[in-house]
Length: 455
Image (cartoon, rainbow, N blue to C red):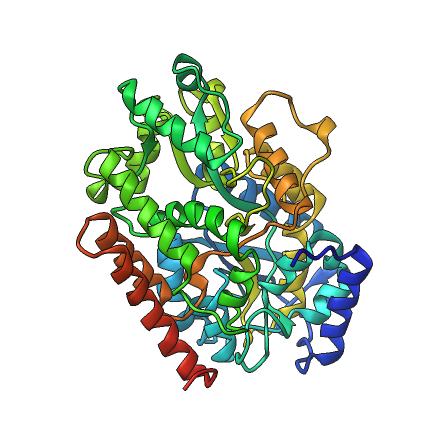
């Protein structure tokens, strides 16, 4: 069911979280003459782990760190940059030690944020959300996907544990010249999208640059088709599935249709040849170099495309629904969230740092690299006809239609491994769509039993 919640209501949500929060933020380092100092009167170091690996984004963060240090004399940011996979592999152990990061970017969902809350490793940010008025910067659904009950028993409710400055959403990047040469316009329905695939294939083009050696890209490709069929049949399904509420499972007609559709695309030769052995970065380079017509992925690659050899040829659109203008869930949300280690003795300073990364200044700098600020941007600040203009318009559409969907791997602590492996088997024609559904349903059932939701 479509929900429209005003900013006032969102404030109420966060204030209610404040009242229910049990944890009280630890005291910050003492302030002496405007300087943050440690117990010995020296410089205070804030250890921050992030995953801003792209050079342009990393430069923005370095600049923001320097400006934070300048605005807070006596504070030093010790920044450690990790890949997404490395962060997933090392965060839990690091956050459990006194030497661990004070601030870390953590992926949302059961396998990461919720698991760390359950282990008592993340600090409750609810009080800080009220202090810094973070409610003014986020849509209600974004609050929920960063909210967990303090004991980790439920996701999508409870206290706030993370904040993130940039929006992320999955859609279709396309080469404008290739579309024009084939007589194709931006499709307004899913049928038109599939017609474009066939036309591009007939013209000798690779319709979709795709590499799934890394496993996770296929989650987004599957989700693009899934959203179309969910929009037809069950638009509320994703919330119930991710938050483990209601009588839902992966054994859903829309999921089966999506799996069948991907197999059809494999059989039709719409993907990069031998895609199971192609890395995501190589598929990106194929598209960026002009050797494929489309690329189904997230908005986070926009900056690299804008810096590539065919920047002026690049455009973006959201996967259309079954009918023109049909509302459908879009895999969307934010970048991985800034969180605070529960055992940090610098929680107040860490919260101040997170607020700095959520500031208008940070949004402006991130936008300069091609990333979409989570708050969006006024139209007069975006150059018309550019790739970035397409992305801003798409994010506005997602927010205005309340179409923010979910990343499927958030569903259970093990779902990432299950769905990536089973999608590779499905796309490699090693299992049937029905077997693909069964494998993922088994994972979800096991999780519901563990949670006590199902017997």
